[in-house]
Image 1 (cartoon, rainbow, N blue to C red):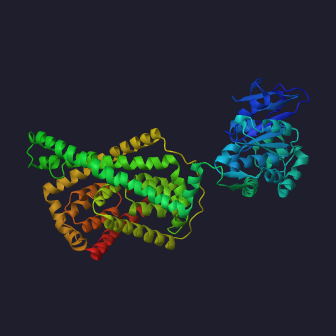
Image 2 (image 1 turned 30 degrees about the horizontal axis):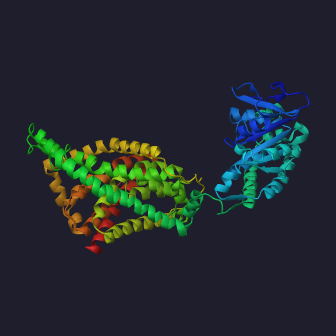
Image 3 (image 1 turned 180 degrees about the vertical axis):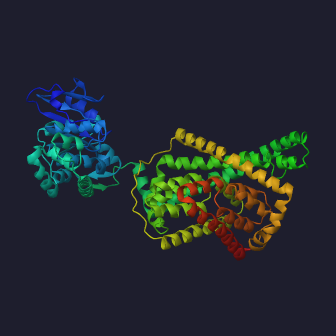
Length: 614
């Protein structure tokens, strides 16, 4: 879309000044427009677009509204329309959100750089106070070089002061180096705003003047961003007085002295919900009472009337590893309640805005294992589903971080279903065994992560992350996420569980299972000091780790044997779905390194633990 002369398209009286409202989306421009102009407005379609331009008299002059934009440029229709209206402005009233100064002042400085007289309406001052943000308005005005009026538009506070300040609008302070660059173009284009946009690479403005497009956008934007950050650092400070409880709590979550105890409380509540209430009470009902007490006898009786239970088909369908017995009981009676409980807690943390704060809290810790705070997001999501979390490693800042995160996810992060079975098995053992398991897995994560950080070339990138408002989780959102993720678990896990049960059943019928148990006995019995039947669980673990963990659930093990078995199955090879995603994300070469490395580490670490504690 080419540049347009605004006066040809809007009904603006001759000699009237064009006072243009400019701001980011959702800063309250419409409220200002109504407050400044009253009810009488004209609406015109902007040429070449379906966008409407709203304008109204302001005394003998006219006020014009613009679409909300983050910068003056020409990437889309809104920006092009805003660009043309701003370029034609005699005065700009720039409305900015006090809570998001760092974001909004970028546009302010760009308008100032265009050489247009500006007055700033510093809106939503009440929201800033609630969030404990104190702004030195006088200093902000001095640093920008223009009038700054604090306002709360929805309650009309500051509107009269803004009206009085409009005609005091003046040109602001510009970076001297940029001013020199602009001066070199001013003689040729005659308008500082046009000169700036040509330097920033706007092809339409450059074409209008018959000049080549500039290539200084990155340099100018970087200098502007640094100036805005410097201004924000000087004019804002965080205060406790007047801030809301959620703001104070959000800050406490970011400080190690208070954030770590809060994290400990959240983990304890999670354990009480998933590991105690659901794993013991709910699963006791679903697995033992319903599935083993009612469902399995019914299925065995029904199928047994059609097929001999001792036949090969009967063994595969309703035997010890039966597709219609063990598989259905594991999925619906054991894993589904645990998965639903885990996703409920995780969804509540996501919806509350806690996870980004956790990322900021652990940033320095994760730097020691080659990640930054953003790495906590795939690691936490890995507790839901390692497959999905492996995909989210894309959000990490460097290839090096993605490699480290992928390996750690595959190695030491149990998925929700596996975690739930682990929690259920540890719940009745006592604090000593829970601590031994937790410390072992934590040490594996730290030692392997530190090793990768030390030997892989490069370093961690800096953390840049937005902190959303802290709020109570919305039950509707939490339930929707929990339902969706739990359904996806069933969709993904059920076919693999059936496949795993079929493989184990065939092995049992053909005698291969017994042969493998004897073959693996030096590892399972000699090295891990577990019953030879534990080999069944590890074979099931090749299909899915949670399937293998579920296979340990009914084995007769001492408390210390349970810890050894759980450590081994936790570090076990990633499930088939995860391995396929790793192959897709990291390629064949890395997959062929990750998979066998983890298999060796699992039996090595499990065996070392066994030799130390049994």
